[in-house]
Length: 150
Image 1 (tube, rainbow, N blue to C red):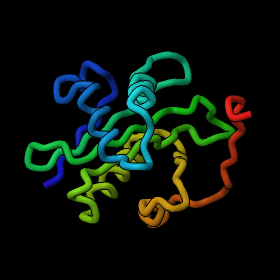
Image 2 (tube, rainbow, N blue to C red):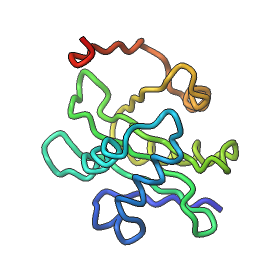
Image 3 (cartoon, rainbow, N blue to C red):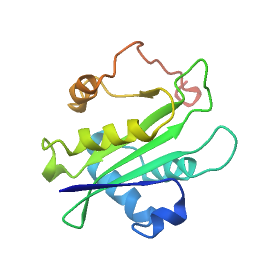
């Protein structure tokens, strides 16, 4: 049975998993849709920040005592014109995908968050269909401008 633990502070989380262990798990199981470990760690730090407009939550899923999934939700600090939360990372152990663990973890993250939630997903990410079944809609095409790429 899947057990989901929600954490709102680093101290609370460190009783079960260290930041480095969480970052390693996410880096491994996000596969080619992930980011560098430094970016993932920054996201965790943001989720636990108590600064104005920041914060969020980290959810870790356990199955038979083993970490099998993780979700990081960050607050956007832009309530009123952009959804209050962004679902930044969702990862499930590659050997357990397709068993509904990711859906349960996302639904728990939505349940404990205040306000609306957005996420960014690559068009070719197979998880896109899961997000649509949960109720996420595609309102905009995201475009980015990178000063470094010029």
